[in-house]
Image (cartoon, rainbow, N blue to C red; front, top):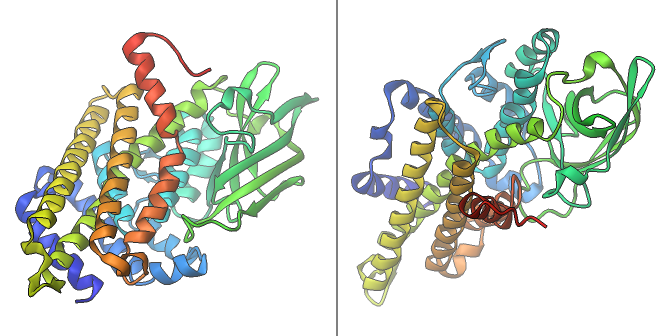
Length: 396
């Protein structure tokens, strides 16, 4: 049975046990179906080859933009103004194909575009957001540095005033899309505190280099950035925010998308596991007849269902304006951890074939380890929850 057949069999069986789509509104399902079509018709047929070749298929960007998925949760400026729940459902469908494509939409919309939307001037919004929504301009978000991403307060990148300009010097690491981006949102320490700057990537002194040797996220782009006395005018500064509140609010937008997205990877793995349990025969019959196999499937269903319902709950909270950063940490910590467990259990059920690209599971396992690391590691989110429970910050 081919992988597509396994997925189809697993999808039918899973829907009979947990029909998640039925929990969405008609509008939310409309957005979900747009993303599902892109994922299944455009990404899935090529993703194994792209992962193997370490190739980011840029020609898919206009197709994703044409569906309105870039910055879809932003109001105005060429953006769709969709609900948070609809955006979450889109993230789930894209990551069901590959984490790298959910990451693309996240970096573009939840990080770069959100920073400009939240903290930019009207001139900045009008200049950049419509072109980013259409996919004409790709954006990146420069916060993480080589010496550590979990402590942005200690960032070494500096911006100093020089007349009416700012001069930015420093380095960033693991910056998605930077080598193909036309604009970068760069966060830097200043004498007044942390500030954000909109930096066109053709500015002298800006250099982005794709990171080589990745064993995860191979079908997407992450880069090192060097900022060698990059000069920008005062008009490039995101003037309405000073301090870490700026980048953290954008990170929370991205973390929210991850809560949904990783359940897409988990769903794909679970569907493969179901299909394989019905098609693989040993000892005279399908492995799905064994109690231990059914126990594994049941455990995976429980964690997928709980994770999907948690994502939906957080989406409803976000749409109501009641979602807190603590609850986003609950979702990120739980759903990534459980998605990894589902992928690992599925890999084991596939036997030796599970480590080949005949199935998407090992690719999802590798990608999920990267997702576990970015936008806050398990440890960081555990400390966020510990602080909420005890009132004591244990970050140092």
